[in-house]
Image (cartoon, rainbow, N blue to C red; front, top):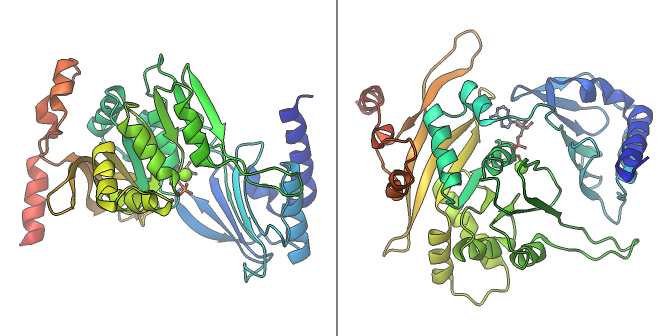
Length: 384
Ligand SMILES: Nc1ncnc2c1ncn2[C@@H]1O[C@H](COP(=O)(O)OP(=O)(O)OP(=O)(O)O)[C@@H](O)[C@H]1O
Ligand SMILES: [Mg+2]
């Protein structure tokens, strides 16, 4: 049995012995996330909406024992010295655990299940998360090597979209992927994945940070670098990667709209011990990031791309210039299902690199950026 197989069997034992109170949830393909708030309270996410379920652990000790054994099955420890655990399970699920007393309700866990069927651009179009034109435009932006940041709130679909975009990179290019805990499964010919390492005093293991891995990536001749989640000082390194000829690099950032994405990246760049003045950092962010794809989870549970925007740099007053190319517009609500009705529409803005599209003979006419009349009428009615 290989190491992966061995891990899997230790993990299966942990599941059958300790996780039996939630086994039905783990097996249920309609459950995408399981949230445990202490032994007595469990919620799940189905189709983007959160529901309480009757499952319970016998008591706090049983819950703690369960996740200790899950941690052990992936070679990690969770105890009072390290009361937080972020890990990927052998079946691809991602878990985060926080122990009491920090978690005041008792051991608190979120399990993000690995989607068995990977979503594709076509799936996003058919579920209405993206329009066909928006999807084609993203494909073109990836093909042309535009630097892309996928931005959004927690669980808005950033990693899923980054995975899809990574898979659209031209096959011959060397892609270096750097993540905290490996989630991306980019199918391409030349992919080099890295995973950061947490320090573990017991095993005398030192931390290897995302930042260090980005620096290594630069010496490993990448065509493009993908950082799964930018949430610390590695932002500055990614921005530098993007500004130094590794066009088409990508990452995700937690932010609520395209403009905030720039500001967030800027403040992350300033966390580290940088001697670069803030004004210069702002300009670097403004010129590194070309396209922002904003993901959102709407109140009806739907995950959609709310904006596709272009960053044009920084104006004389130090403000980022961000132009929306496409946006999602709600037109109604289905009375039966409560689902929002709407679609992604162009915003009457032709991106600055339109000539690249023409020169490369990509089938994307200028008219595709024109806002349809009905949207303008809707806006006039709203304003009235
Ligand atoms: N367009 C979509 N349609 C339906 N489900 C989706 C869509 N995008 C993502 N999902 C599902 O939503 C969940 C969260 O997605 P994902 O992990 O990509 O979000 P995230 O923004 O990266 O979250 P986090 O902030 O925790 O990193 C997953 O279960 C994923 O399969
Ligand atoms: Mg993610």
